[in-house]
Amino acid sequence: MRIGDYAPAVFILALSALVLVGVWDLAYWSGTAPGPAFLPYWLVAVGLVLSIFGIAEARSSRENGPLWPNRPALVRVVATFAGLITIPTLSPVLGMVPVVMLFITFLLVAVLRRPLLPSILTVAVTGGAIYTIFVWWLGVALPAGPLGF
Image (spheres, rainbow, N blue to C red):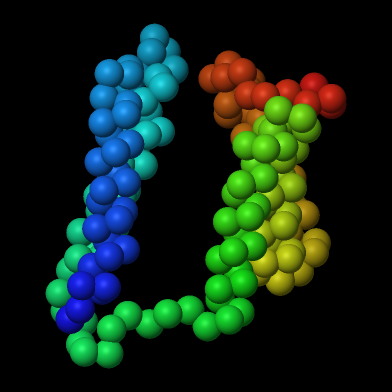
């Protein structure tokens, strides 16, 4: 057991605490829709759970330390992170729903190497569900692109 074994869990715990302090005064619920602190509070909760699991794993680990990802796994992590960075970058230009559909297509086809036809079906169902739930049903104003959604 080394201090480095605890570092990821402590980092997630500190980041969760920072997010919690940043959104403390925001409303969790606003009228009939989630408020600005809805997602951050859930992210903090997930961060706390992950931190607890990370600390428990570090406490029970042997002298070998954590297993680090091999090269292909690291490439998948970096590609996924790059895809996540492009979502807020391209959403104002192309619209939220098309960008999320492009991201899911990228994940399924390029990163996970899934077959094309089931991936396209998954993307279509997911894009339709996002539009139906958030735009049509809840009335959330997602960024719209040149196609109107």
